[in-house]
Structure formats: structure tokens, C-alpha cells
Amino acid sequence: TSVKSKIGRGQITHYQLNNVTTTADPEGNRERVLLLTPLARFYPEYWNNLLKLSYPHELIELGFIVPKTREGNAALAKLEAAVKKVQHGPKKNRFHGVTIMRQDFDTPTPQNEKDRHALAAQKLRRATMARARNSLLFTTIGTETSWVLWLDSDIVETPPTLIQDLARHDKAVIVPNCYQRYQNNGKPEIRPYDFNSWHDSPRALEMASKMGKDDVIFEGYKEMATYRALMAYERVDGGDPHSETPLEGVGGTALMVKAEVHRDGAMFPPFAFYNLIETEGFAKMARRLGYQPYGLPNYLVYHYNE
Amino acid sequence: TSVKSKIGRGQITHYQLNNVTTTADPEGNRERVLLLTPLARFYPEYWNNLLKLSYPHELIELGFIVPKTREGNAALAKLEAAVKKVQHGPKKNRFHGVTIMRQDFDTPTPQNEKDRHALAAQKLRRATMARARNSLLFTTIGTETSWVLWLDSDIVETPPTLIQDLARHDKAVIVPNCYQRYQNNGKPEIRPYDFNSWHDSPRALEMASKMGKDDVIFEGYKEMATYRALMAYERVDGGDPHSETPLEGVGGTALMVKAEVHRDGAMFPPFAFYNLIETEGFAKMARRLGYQPYGLPNYLVYHYNE
Ligand SMILES: Nc1nc2c(ncn2[C@@H]2O[C@H](COP(=O)(O)OP(=O)(O)O)[C@@H](O)[C@H]2O)c(=O)[nH]1
Ligand SMILES: Nc1nc2c(ncn2[C@@H]2O[C@H](COP(=O)(O)OP(=O)(O)O)[C@@H](O)[C@H]2O)c(=O)[nH]1
Ligand SMILES: [Mn+2]
Ligand SMILES: [Mn+2]
Image (cartoon, rainbow over all chains, first blue to last red; front, top):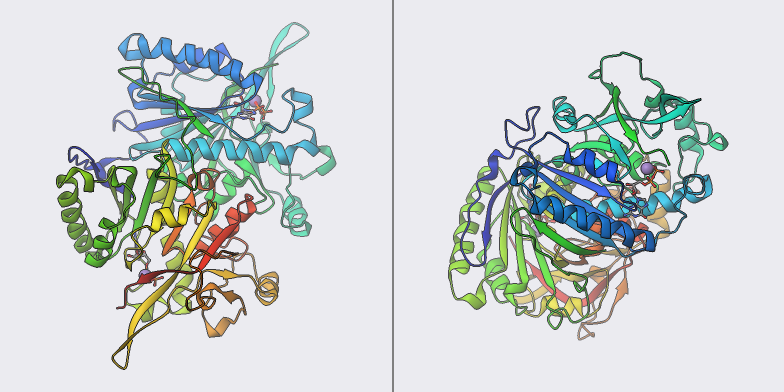
């Protein structure tokens, strides 16, 4: 689809937007990227990393959705201050625009890592996250959006060329590998963080076939072993950062999507969809719509270490 | 959800939009209505009816998606001429804005009524319609949208108070009864047209339980009797136009939706969703998200008679 014309109330404006493209060379083609972040906490490291992205800022639109909780209010204050600073600063650093949404519905689960990862809390929590992502997405995606880059607020380190690197694969959906830095007896090391990017297994499919329609399979719980092959473990030390692998599930910590995939209707199901939910359900929806997601096992982004 | 602030590249604009409401009194609360029409043919009767809507035009945004076919090109030319005329005309008639999209993907099926209603063609046709609706919706829904009114391009007659009348029920999803005028031996009569608004039946649910996940049930085909109770037949002559009935399936010829339902992720599935597709799948999705659709059996809108 393309936008033919947009005609305002006062003047008649004609945008001939048949040239809104989504290509492997987004910078050359001046493609607009909508960078979306559900944000419950504000990390200065996330913000600094964002500012260092080398993709032209005037082609990046930012969108945030912040929960209406005490924690959300604190994050919002910091976010607004940071946004004002950059949008008032040197022109070349300014983003095309920034939208901040508040999330009316309640956050049903605790925010510390141990509690929020407990299996019982997952379904409600992931459903809430899915609704937040959908609201943010469908309110901000516009006539000129070529790409949507999902980036969690606790992704504190990426290559500055993240957007160009992901786009150059020219995939409908593409996801880097999300790791975490930590100290091992005082030695800096890295370890896998996000387990939502995976290849399906006969076992998980068999599990799903025996489940009720409303049940959800979650990855990474020993109570529910799926034997799926996780991209997290497919990284090869010194391997080509641009080697690709097709995926059936994707995580959302960093996730690049051609806008047409979302426009066709691929969203983050807040309910069981083929026994999957949120970003994993999104991957299934994209596939049902004919789009194959890919992952980059050796291309790393880093999650904050609490 | 609500929009907290929207901050542009040049100046810093703060919209305090916590007061974007969706209420039974949209006019009193100055609520923005996004009126969306997938449009393969341009009917002057549709356009004239649209112009007569008494809801303040400055609160109505129009959105169209037109297929890239010979027929679509002809419709587009007429639509653009009509849009220019009204947007250049007296200020009180002008709409808030108009977006026209072109639909890149092919229209897979013939456009005459008999052929397009053939059961075999339905799945592909309804999937194409669903993608068109999703593209239009997710490209045009914005930070200020309170309501989305779906109105097919061949709805040639509605009460001028359509928007106010539907909104006053304060339902997440509400659908009038879509009829058709015809001549019976020279006498003007009316008959049901849209059969997609229905109450589920044990029989249809049983059929679905025995179907494959990707199979779709269609309403109104004798090859596939569902015994669902159709709103089309629930109209009572002289009955209260504001009597409500809860529905499991809805049609899209005229369909009013609170923007938050779509923002939460309720879209028009272009694939089998609980064995339903497009507007009927949308109703199921809305219900999965906790929103109950309603119909108005005695509130009529009229479809063109080919
Ligand atoms: N809008 C919104 N964002 C949230 C909420 N909970 C977490 N987030 C954000 O969503 C992203 C993922 O959440 P997080 O707690 O980091 O999940 P995890 O890393 O998968 O355990 C992060 O960017 C959070 O800041 C919420 O309730 N509402
Ligand atoms: N964008 C788009 N609109 C279409 C297409 N086919 C039909 N329409 C429009 O979609 C609506 C429903 O289609 P229609 O053929 O009237 O369906 P029916 O009345 O249910 O048989 C009408 O407003 C049509 O003008 C298509 O391929 N693309
Ligand atoms: Mn996180
Ligand atoms: Mn029609």
C-alpha cells in the first residue's frame, strides 16, 4: 500500500507518496524509521546509546508508552527532560518527532526481575505488554513510516549503525541477539538474555496440539520444557555478524519490522494465538500473513544488568 | 491509553491530551471521528449521504483505500474531484482531513455481486478486504482519534445523525442493520443485505470445533448451514431503533468502534481466527480483548442495489 494524497482542512496538500520505500538502503532512500519503546524505567545508558545512533535523526521518529504507576511517573519525568534537551539542542541531533503516551490500564505484576519472570505471572504480564505495544504502534505509525524499530528501554548498548545494519538484510522482520554483560570473578563476560527468539521444535508443536486454545507456551521455564532451538545459544564466537537464520518466535528487546507487516495487521496478540503471545505471537502472525522472520545470532545488542 | 505529549522537531509542542475521551456525547466533548471506507467504486449517493452527516465535519477525518485496478483508478478520479470540491468549499462543510491510500496488492476476485459472493472465492476475497482495512486503519488512526466509523462505499443512505446515534449507546463496538431498498412489482420495499452480524449457534461452534485451524466458516451459504441467529432477521417493523442486542459476529458495511479497541490490537484478521475472518474475526478479537459488540436490529442503513 502507499499513500496517494493527504488533503487537509485548510489548504489542499498532495503528497505523492508512491515513493515511500522500505529497502536495504534506508538512508539513501530517505526512509522514515519509527523507533518505539515501551518504557517503565528510564536508563541514561539507553538514552545515550539512542543519541549515538548514526542513522540521520531527522529520519527517526520516537514513540514511548509509559505506565501510569509511581515508577512510570518517575521514568516519564526523566524521559521528558531528556527529550526536551535533545529537541532544543543542535539541529542535527534532533529527532523528527517524539510522541509520549501514557498507559491507562494497570500493570498487574511486580517489576523486579525474579518476580516478573515467574511462570504464573507471565500470561497477564505479557498480555499487558502486548496491549501497550499495540497502542503505541497503532497510534504512531503514519503515512510516511517505512520501518518500525522496537527497542526496549533497558537495551543499553548497540552498534551505532544498528538501523542500517538491520535494514541492509531487507527482511520483513529481523531480530539481533540480545545478550547481557556481567562480571565473572571480576572478569567481564557476556551471556544470553532474551530467549524469545527461537526455531520451533516438534516437541513444542506437540505440546501446543494438546493444549487448550487459550493456553500459552512460554520459553525458558523448566516446568515447561519445549526443546526449541534458541537463537540465544546459536552465537558463534567470532562468527559473521550478518549470518541469518529463519525464526518462528522473536523477542522484542530489539526488533526491526517493515511497516507494511504491521499495516497488514500483524500486531502483538494479547491473547493466545496458536498458543503464543506478545512478540512470539507477533512472529506467528507475521508468518500467517506470509512474512518470514529472521534472526542474526552473531549480531549482539546488550540488555541492562540489574 | 492517552497521549501525554507530542514534541516536534522544530518547536516543542505539548499536547495535554489526557482529555481525549470516547463518550456517549461525542459532539459535546469534541471527539474526533475517523471515518474509514475501503473504496473500489465511487457512488455519488454515498458521497451525498456522507456530506449530509450532521456531526460537525471539522471533527471528522476521512480515510479511503482504493485498489490499484482499472476500476479503482476510475473510482479514485471521482473521489479526488469530490474531495477537492468539499475541501475548497464553505468552511463548515470541510472535513478535518482526508487521506487516500492505494492498495498495492492484487484484487484477486471479480467485482460483480454474483461472482464475488461465490463460496470458493470468499476466503481470498475476505482476506484481501481485511488487509485493506488494516492498512487503512493503522496508517490513519492517530493520537487524537476517539472513534472509528467504518462505512462501505456502497452505503447510500443513513440517518444524518448516524454518528451521534451510534455513539450514544456508548458501546466499544456497535453495528446498525444493513438493508437494501428494492422494487417489488413496482412497490418500494426493503430486505436484509448484510448477514455478517449474528449471534453464535451451538451448531456453528460444533462445526468450528471439527474444522482445521485454517478453515473459515462463512455466513449465508446453504452449502454450510450454521443455524446462527442473524441480526438481519431480527428487525421488528416499528420497533425501537435503539434496542440493542449483543453479537458474536459483525459486518463492516457500517460499524462504529471505540478507537481504544483497535489500539489494543483488534484488527481484521486476514487469516482464520477461531475459524472466522475479516469483520467477523474482528468481532471475535474484540471479545478476546474483553469488548462486547452490540447490534441495533431496528436501526437501518441502506446498501446500494446494483
Ligand atoms: N508501557 C509499559 N512498559 C513496560 C511495562 N513493563 C515493562 N515495560 C517496558 O517494556 C520493556 C520490557 O520489559 P522488561 O521488564 O524489561 O522485560 P524483560 O526484560 O523481558 O524482563 C522494557 O522497555 C520496560 O521498560 C508496563 O507495564 N508498561
Ligand atoms: N480497497 C479495496 N476496497 C474494496 C475492494 N473490493 C471491494 N472494496 C470495497 O469494500 C467494500 C465492501 O466490498 P463489496 O464488494 O461492496 O462487498 P459486499 O457488499 O459485502 O459484497 C465496499 O466499500 C467496496 O467499495 C478491494 O479489492 N480493495
Ligand atoms: Mn528488559
Ligand atoms: Mn457492498
